[in-house]
Image (tube, rainbow, N blue to C red; front, side):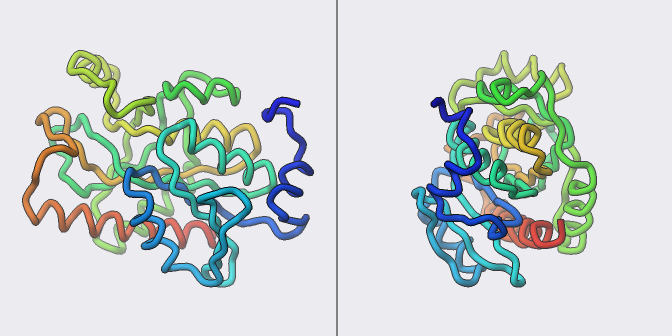
Length: 247
């Protein structure tokens, strides 16, 4: 049997997750620095355990069971999202960083995608159309909670692309003309999985690359920018946890 046709029971047996023991939310993070991110994020959870599949963890926050997985790229991100959403996890939250096409966006500002161009190469296999959307209520909540922490955010049209490297100046110019503000590698795929299995979705992404200025992750930046990016990443996870237990 092909994996897309697996029944819920197959995943329950594989994870050892009985009916009634569902995790309320899954927080996914796309980053190269998997070991560092995982150690930092799991420190905020209680009773952490690794699930049967590598790099998928479960823990407790305010007595609610939450999953965390550091998954880079759309092909990897859909795996934990697919399994847990099929098993009844009702909220999928994508965090991480993004590139921006907005000349006014500063490093560390948080992009809150509402509409997303699904060009990740995976979404359509979960029934997604050309564009997908996050949950409007969750975006409202996240925007408010970020503001409470004095973190600047902007609602943005996002494009999810399958590769950080396969992006040219000509592509970026075309995306800008289309109205795209930010670019990541996971969000639309996670939204598509949520749509297939009935889970709500949210994405919060710290601005890093500034493509109009030619700034990529390869470039050094001032300590003030680094401090804003670091703080933004910390606050995003705080908000993700609060949304997870409240949704």
